[in-house]
Amino acid sequence: MYNIIETVLIVVSILIIIAVLMQPTKQQDALNALSGGGGDLFSNQKKRGFEAFMVKVTYVLLVLFFVCSLILVYLSSH
Image (cartoon, rainbow, N blue to C red; front, top):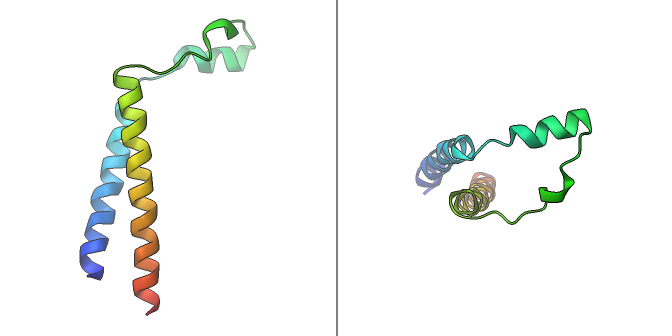
């Protein structure tokens, strides 16, 4: 059981890395944050399409990672 959860944790870790790398970059937001430039008008837009999907996938993977980690801690202590 421990080895199965450990394997799932490794796979989820790799999927988290891929999901984060696939998210669109926000270069303009970073540039505005550093330079203090305007652009606050469009900063609170709702994510749509691929970006919203990738955010949801990342959240699900992070929850799976956390749950698998807690299960491994529990299994290793008993």
